[in-house]
Length: 230
Image (cartoon, rainbow, N blue to C red; front, side):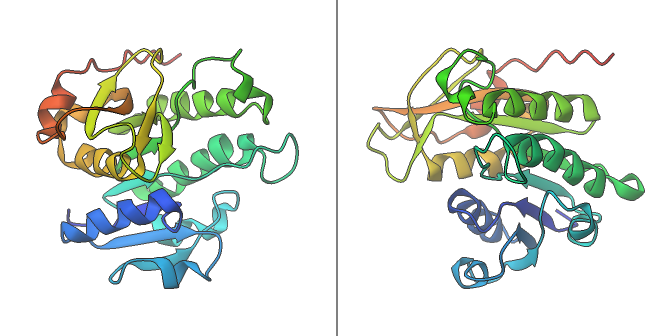
């Protein structure tokens, strides 16, 4: 890509994996996070760390200016009130990122890492700061923004392949299972280079079987979203 790729939440466990895969492709990567230390020490060599808080628009303008792509993988708080409530990070924070990334007319591809059960308001997880409501609100905000986008809804994130090596992509938010962070990182990065992933929302899980080789073919089997803008 001609311009840098920004990974918002790039100093987190998933974010660092995404940063590494982008660097492996030769991209210039800006990793945004709240805290400088230990972020700089943990990031892969070659990544540029920029302090950026999605709750504070003033910290986003410079690092997100004229980026070719943005991966949003912010880990939310679960407070009912205060600055770490899901509304502040997953919805208002995403809006701040989109405004900064599109300033001046830029149109980056945005990959949003959401989560399983984002459409299930009655799920017990929603008791934690209405996290699922704000996940879904963030998804809808991105779909209506008019940018090329991909929404990834991982199953329960784990650090290994205990559930299996095969990646299963689904739609409809009805499935359940675990998925390795390494596979989620692969999905996020491959989505930026695979045209069939544009305008698509999907869930992903691991299961026994062989590893996924052709991501573009897997994305092509999915249905694009039907976006209705009022």
